Image (cartoon, rainbow, N blue to C red; front, side, top):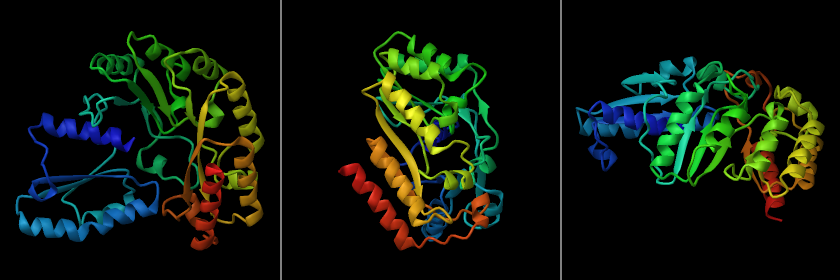
Length: 320
């Protein structure tokens, strides 16, 4: 999503007469597109303040803008660093992007989220789920395919919660566009993964046989603390159904280790899940407290060393 937003921000600036600088030292405008999901990402933005101050001392014309997922509580501090703050959504997705890839076109179909996972700030920074109309999405997809893009990525915080038509129907309409291309999407929500979507993935030659299906934890108590409204058993049942219909599916997941209160026994349940499902890949995050989320009120009682051990344990399972 951040990369897609950056492509549209770049296009919007060029439409207003700006030109891309060959290096940061020669820029008269620096736009930082921030991710706010993890505290470490926010800390990195604070960490560039000295660099920006140095650049501004060398160039009196330099202006700096911060955009992206910005919590209201962080804005006071960021105003001391940046000349301008433009929280997302900064601009309309109707702005045609300046693609950074020659083969891959990122097309956001929605923005925001209604699920309020306890570790996530997206509902507070991007707001509730808002979806683009299917006609506009299809128009953008046709233009990208006409330009020769071989991959069409449909993007959303919970991409399969799309409305006003079922996500599977939107996917079918994109697949019906003439051309030689593949469709990928990210990230789907397990509770919204319909049989219709599974069937479409199984039957369509244009929909890639790849799926990132976030699980976040292999323990039911931790899932409840995360406000993830499914059980491990439901997740495994869904994966079994998907693999039965799509035997050659390449399956990845997202998982958080060291969530507040996660015991070694509860982590072992995640290990068991990894051993049973045998993911092809996993995006493993060490939990870090993020102010503004419900989980921030919980005691972060798993040491960093233990979080690193748990992360390494899961990575070892992936490579075994």
